Amino acid sequence: MKALVYTAPETLTYRDVPDAAAAGPDDRVITVQSVGICGSDMHAFLGHDERRPAPLILGHEVAGVIAGTGQAVTVNPLVTCGACPACVAGRDNLCSTRQIISMPPREGGFAGAVALPARNLVELPAGFAPDRAALAEPIACGWHAVRLGRAAVPDAANALVIGGGAIGLGAALCLRAQGVGDVQMIEPNALRRDYLGARCGQAVVAPDALDPVRQFDIVIDGVGFDATRAQASAAVRPGGAIVHIGLGSASGGLDIRRMTLQEITFIGTYTYTAADFRETCAAMFDGRLGALDWTETRPLNDGQRAFADIRAGLTAAPKIILKP
Image (cartoon, rainbow, N blue to C red; front, side, top):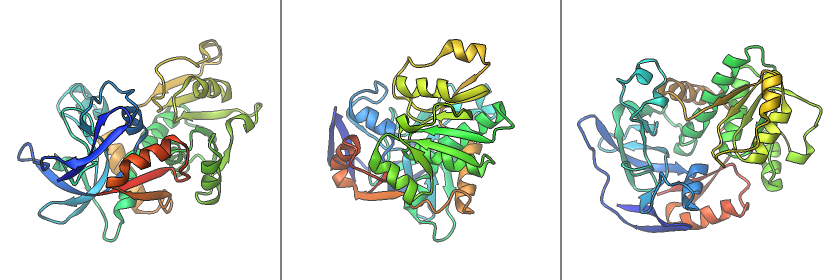
């Protein structure tokens, strides 16, 4: 099969690779129809993720059909053991032996096919497009984050989302779906700000245009750099919560003194539980998360250029979907 292989920093090579194969009786081979480019894929592409060494097939936001049956599915890429204390407690995203496709030993979805356990597949309703279905994974990150944030601040009436990529937009949609009606977004790229406002109906401003007096019950940082953590620290209200999804940098930016004096909760959040993923899919299928039409498609063999365009800030859509 053909695949887009990360071979060196800033280098992706479209080439032949061995066909994806089931590793055990419970595995299914998924013929990939749509696969999204994630920020973590970009992190690896730039050579900044030691967990993803070259050569490696990246990509974990996958929708396609089960080979041999033709059943359309979207893919939960997080493979867990189901038996450790975290899994038994329903916090399987914290499984001590968790694996995710696009990280060794599991190859990712920038390919003609990928193999996963059957329990990781969610069947699609008839006619549900694979480009929309591939958004389940990034939106599930937001669903999980919002669920944790609302548990910390049950009376939350407003929220700030930092970052207008798919993670940030997904979080904004999930906030509204979970009962937080007043959502403000900030995004530095003017091209994307215009898209989010005109196409996605979001209230979005540049980082330096945010009202410095306004404070928020929940702040979701979908970027994770020093500057975004500093803005989150300043914008959250006393007794509120910062929910941190982004993996931009490892440290810096948090105002620990203010967080202590104002009893601000900080929540680190990683991916989603299997239940979160299924709930996200249900919300997508019944329309609670909107039209899900905020993607741009490119052929898989043009993936190198797609990554370069994202890095240069030339893409307005929050998500580029590659098509094998």
